[in-house]
Image 1 (cartoon, rainbow, N blue to C red):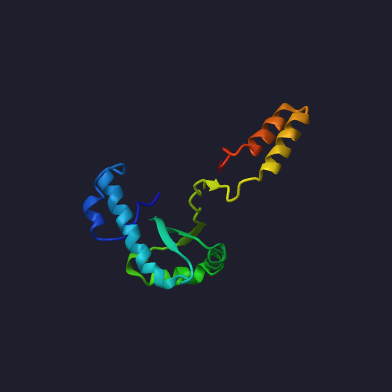
Image 2 (cartoon, rainbow, N blue to C red; image 1 turned 60 degrees about the vertical axis):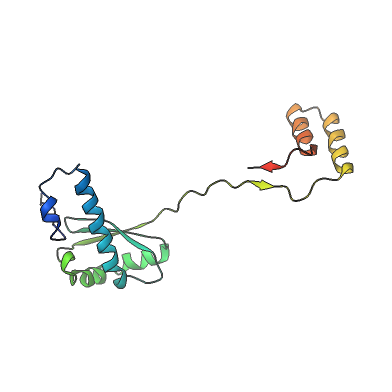
Length: 152
């Protein structure tokens, strides 16, 4: 198995440290951020691109647009030739492009914009008293309640 290719000269100073060392990981991330800035001009400008890994000739990039990711995958060989002109990517053999997963949306709280009229509330209460299903009856009573404002 080949040893990892060192991308930047300052990596030579920390390469003798253990792989689990925090400072080594920090330097790796800093180097990948530099690579991200360098390759931005070579990738389609409509996308948001980020280098997440580069070692042993494998460059892994994330993007936020599936159509552009497909385009980069299709033109894989052309992008390899472009990137090989960059001194820190001379040993590039393969590009892996992954769709960046969007952050999970936080739940939004909604407030009822209108309160139910008294007639509607009364009708819901009457319907709740006529229904034999306990869960449905409770749901109708909650709906008729003026305190039932917040919904997640």
